Image (cartoon, rainbow, N blue to C red; front, side, top):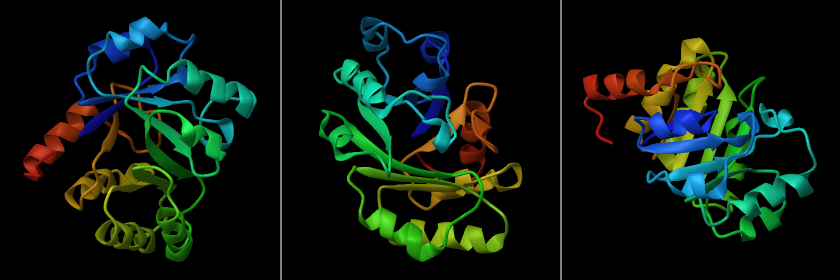
Length: 200
């Protein structure tokens, strides 16, 4: 499914994506619970920390409170691989994620993360440097199910589409301005998938 990472309630309401990811760390203010519930599409709650490429800079205790507040309003929660177990006790389906904006770790390191996952889906978003990094991502996608894995960076945008062709359940996009390096818009992703005859 095509996921749109949104930064406001207005973007969420107008999104043409299949799934809406609320990047609450990028919202100017948190939406009301009822406003979130009124959006009928599947929804992901994400409160990305600064260390993981987001804007959230408060304590983990405060971040957990946000997840608890919306625990009955979202279908999925995106929680980082280093988060405490108490996040995973909440009533969501989980996307356990790993982000690295500097490099792509070696295959063995990423493999260990995937095999130790606590959520239904594992997400890997790492910075690409060369073809070896593409090979690492492809190998993981070919060996594991329920895995979203791609390289960040403008020249590696194609790996986002490639991942779907290799079984990723989601492709992360933006409504207009990218929230991550190399991110495609919803329309760009839909067009590319259609041209390549990749079925969602």
